Length: 103
Ligand SMILES: Cc1cc2nc3c(=O)[nH]c(=O)nc-3n(C[C@H](O)[C@H](O)[C@H](O)COP(=O)(O)O)c2cc1C
Image (cartoon, rainbow, N blue to C red; front, top):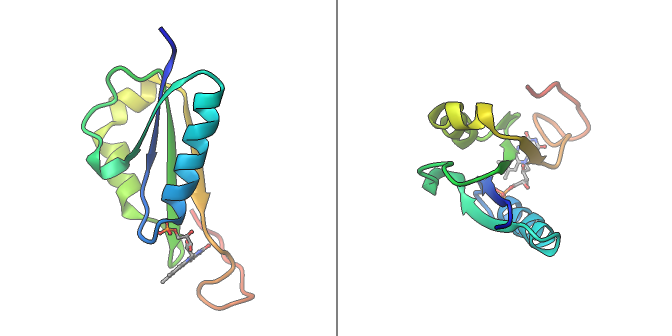
């Protein structure tokens, strides 16, 4: 049976969702079984061998869905390989051309 990977994303306007789908397609092409799901609809990490987390930055912070997802799935995430990506158009906030440190 092939390894199963979850690509869990948050997205308000669709860009991160599109990137998550593209990552999912690449992983499927590599032979993995892949689910691409909005992270707020994920109820369990059971059955997955690895997780990819993707989320956008809004007003200097990664969307709060990530905090909720990581908090709710802390045990599962601590046992699995996890990769992450963030989408954004920095430096757009607080002022175009200005850089800031984003945690
Ligand atoms: C109101 C607003 C605030 C944003 N703030 C930031 C920001 O602080 N840093 C950044 O890099 N991108 C910022 N962006 C750009 C978004 O992160 C970017 O468009 C992202 O790809 C949106 O993802 P989504 O379409 O999945 O929601 C902001 C966009 C909007 C509309």
